[in-house]
Image: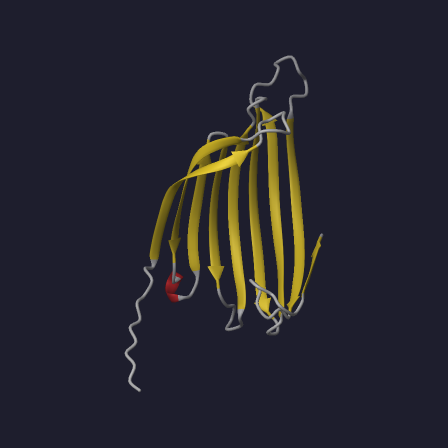
Length: 181
């Protein structure tokens, strides 16, 4: 049998942009919802430095929330099938009811591997700094609202999957566990 195969490369650079609508609860109310318009975009570069690594960035903008993210992904590490990700993120959120602003910055590193055909394992480390402050403090207040909180998380997880079809399981089990410090 003769076969003709045509291989087409994906473009090395990909740019996407768009309009989005997010649902959020009104501040100070547990009922109702507001639909908030926004913009989003990302730029991704594949095959970084001749390697199968991906470098990219993404931005999201809404009326009271902004987010920027840079990331690097690699499908293997030193020839082993260990997927690695490194992510830098910065966000800002304004609150409608107050003059409070929350700035958050984080850095994260994650690795995932398929230890056996049925066992998937991963671990991650994430460090985040949240800074919440009042943009119009009372000048007579000796202690204006200004809080900085550092949070570091170390997470490990494992999943044992013997299902015959993850989308429409007729037999098998999925057992997963996660630990966070």
